[in-house]
Amino acid sequence: MPSRISLRRPSPTGAVLAFGAFLVLVGVLYVSVSLTGRPPEITDLSSRTASPGEILIIEGRHFGEERSSSRVRIAGRYPAASSYVSWSDTEIQLRIPEDVRSGLVYVRTDQGESSGRLFTNPRHLPEQREETAGSPGVPRVDSVSPDQVTVGEPLTISGKSFGRRRGSGMVLFFAGTLEPPARFPPVTLAALDRRPITRELRDAVAPSVKLGEYQRWENRSITVTVPDGAQSGTLVVVTDRGVSNPIAVTVARPAGEKRYYDKRSFALRQELVVEHITTNPGRFETGSNELHLWKPALPESPSQRNPQTLRRNKLPLFSSPEGFDQFKFRDLGPRDRIELSHVQLIDRYAVHSSISAGSVPSSYDTGSQLVRRYTASNRYVPSDSESLRGRAARAVGNQRNPYRKAEQLFSLVRSVLSPDEEGNDWDVLRAYERGAGDAFDYAALYVAFLRASDVPARVVSGYLVPPDLAGIRHHWVEFYLPTVGWVPADPALADGMHAETFTATAVESDDPGSYYFGNLDSRRVAFSKGLIEVPSLSPDGRTREPRYRYSLQSRYEELSGNISGYNSRWKPVRFLGEY
Image (cartoon, rainbow, N blue to C red; front, side, top):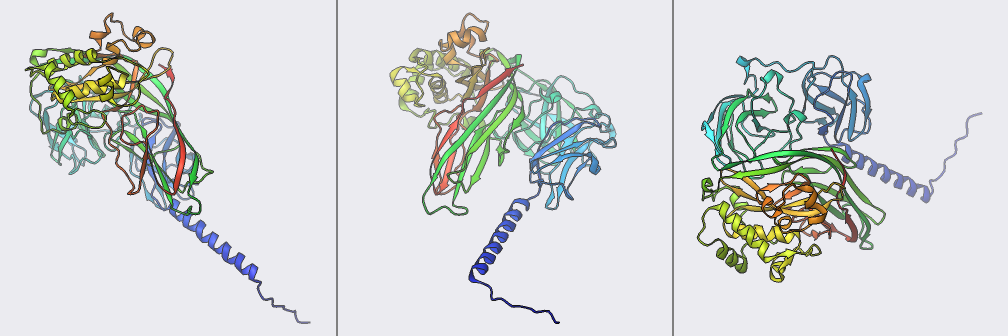
C-alpha cells in the first residue's frame, strides 16, 4: 500500500514563530561577526624574559574564546598544540617550548595578526656583531651632537636605520655605562609615552611624547629634548627592529642636580562602581546610549618608576599618553552594573635638590611646548587673575632669576593661607580671599603665582602614604628650571598640614618649611602632573564630575543618549602593601 502523505496548512502562529527565530539567528550572527571581526591585539606580556618550560601569559583582546585554528608565533616559530595551557578572548597561557629563541610575539586568528611584543629567552640572547649593528634594519648610532648638553636642550643623534617615523620607537638615557648590545636587557616597545619596562630598565629615562620632546625622527637623524632626570652615561635608540649600540652622552648640570633615593614600592588598588542606571522610558534601543569613563593612570617620572599591573578585571579601550585609561560602555539599562578594579605596583623615590641659584638661567624657550603648556591659565589655576598677578608681582619685584622667584612665591603662599583640611571646593580664588585652604588650594595658588611670574609650574595630584597605609589625598607642586628640570615643592606640608599624621614620620628634617622647597619624601604616589585635558567624544555628551577626585583632569565621565541618571562611586585608592 502506498504511503499516505498528508499536507497541513502552516498555522499563522507557527509562521510568526519561525520568522522570529530567523530574526534572532540573524541578530546572533550579526553580534558574533561584530565581536569577532577584529584583529587580535596584545596589550601586555606577563614577563618579557622567560625560559623554556615556564608559562608565558599574553594579555589583550579579540583572541577569540577558543583557540580553534588560531595560534601564537614567537620569534618566527609556532608552539605545538600541547604548549597551550588556556585560551580566552583576553588571555592566552602557553608553556615556552625548548626550541624558541628571542624575538617578537604575535597572535594570529582568522581576523588577522596582532602587532608584535618583544620577548627574550635568556638561553638564546640575540647576537649582534659590532660590524653589523644597524643592518638589516637594526638601528645604529654613529654620533651625538653637541658633545655636552643640559636638561631641556636639543640633542641630535646621527646614524642609520632609525625608521622614517618614530612609531613606537624611543630614545633611552642611562646613568653610567651599559653592557654591549649582545647582552642588552630586554625591552618592551609600547606605544607613545606609556612604556612598561623591565626590571633591568627601570632606571632609563625617555623623552616625553606629551611635552613634544621628540622634535624630529628620520631614518638617519633624531633630535630630542634632553628629558628631566637624564644624567651623563649612555644613550640607545630602540625601534621595533631592535636596540642600537650604546653611545656615551654627557649631560652637564651647571645649575645643580637632583638625587633620587630612599626607594619604596607600593601596591595599590583603584576601584570604580557605576550602578542604578535609569533610562528614558520607551527609548531604549540598540545604540541608544554610551557611557565613557576615564580612569587616572600612574605617570612615570624620575621619582616614580616602573608601574606594573598585577591584576585588572577589564581592559581599557585604550591608554593615553596624557595619563588616563579610557573605557566605553554601550546600550546600558537598569539591570547593568559596571565594576572596574585595577591593582598595580609602583616604585617611588625621595628627591633631594642641590641648586646653585646664581647659575640658573633667567630665560626660557618661550616657544617650547613645555613652557606654553605650564604657563597658561586654566579653570583650576587662574594665573590670569588680576589680583593674583598683582600680588605675585609685588612679591618678586625686579627679580629675574626663576629660582629666586620660586623661593619668594613659596613664602608668599604660606603667608596668605592657613591650613584648612576640610576645604574641598576646588576654588582657589575663594581660598585666597578667605585666607585658608586645603592641600589643593596651597598647590594651585602657588602654581598660579609662579605662572603669573613666567615660571612654568604644575599641580601634582595623588596620595600621601603613611606607614599605616591609610592613604591621604594630597596635592603638591613642581616648577621647571632651565638646565635643571622639574623641582618639587609641597607648600601645604611646609605650612604644617598633616603635621601629626604624616610629616612626623615621612621626613627626618626638623624644619618641614625649608625641607619641602626643592625636596620631597618617598611616601607618596602621583596620579596626574598638571591638568589632563580629556576631549569630549560625543556632540550631545553630558559631563559628570565625581565628588571624590584624586587626579586633576577635565573629564571623568561622559554620557550620551537616553541615560537619564546613574550613580558612580570612585572609591578612594586603597594601598595594599609597602615593599
